[in-house]
Length: 429
Image (tube, rainbow, N blue to C red; front, side, top):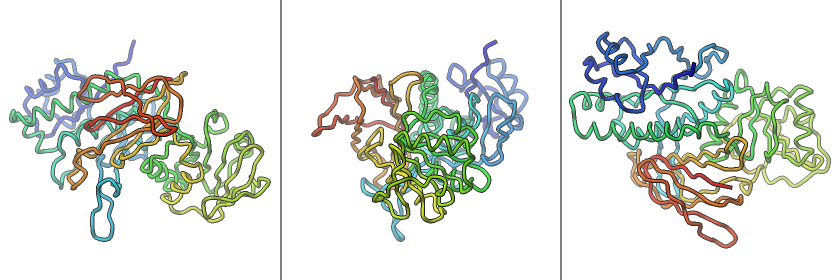
């Protein structure tokens, strides 16, 4: 028997009229998450073919308290942020625009870590719109949907009080916003095959992401993504059997040294031509050979067979600095995608399973921002170093479009048209 793939919506507490179930009929949402909804609402939802789940049955927990071995087919992670862009701050002034990169709150790294720890399980993210600020606009809701869906997770769609009240009252503007939200959900369900793509990058980040390594490891995932450092998450418990082919570098995050079998694995990776980045506490296990000039302060760089090892000379205590150091050590010339004028975007790079086709997903937080200079997308240019035959642009509100390449010296670039909240680039080999 095929398991129904549920697309969840959290029923607003103030909605007591069963007729409001009609807002879900014929759309992509097929699961109502109830927190004590009236019996009439539950009955109407089931008659409409919706699955009804009680909130308490989901076992929702913060990331640090999730039971990864639970038998349930899905994991629900709570206590998450509302995805959005905030302006960079300089002194007491907010700085935005092309040269002042915004600070982006995102749950994508949480979803990716959860998928790595619980392979095969559906990941649900539970978070609500901010209550003490101006309610989110339509673009903000679309970005929140895309932030989860771009990494294969599902947001339990939740409405702010103003929008839920307006929808219940039949407000036309609220209905338009609702249609836009449902259209975004439908887009990702139509392209559900993309969830099977493997998120990739030049760097493997290896850690338990728990215990003494929880803060450094998880914040490194968060901050590396903010800096558009593409990476693969590798759980420490599985690194000995992990296929590291195609990676430029591997970063061992944990302060306690790896076991003998993992040392052998990482040695083989480095001696085969990779870059191994290790903390000061593991430096003695990977002594290397000839000393090299290191482009990053605080590391000793040595040859290691055909590759290199970069050993920290001081303890790591700042994930922001570690993320920046890792990007500089790996070198930006190994970035699988270069993007210009995309400071308000979060970029996700993945590869088709068993193939060479690539997918680049861009989640834009510009239209969702209330800050000056961030209410629209700048003209964005994308460059791919790999050879490819075609690039197709997918947007939420437009038909797929084949992009024309533009030559810039020795590079091939693509200029992206304006888009709201989300776009995807299918890159055919």
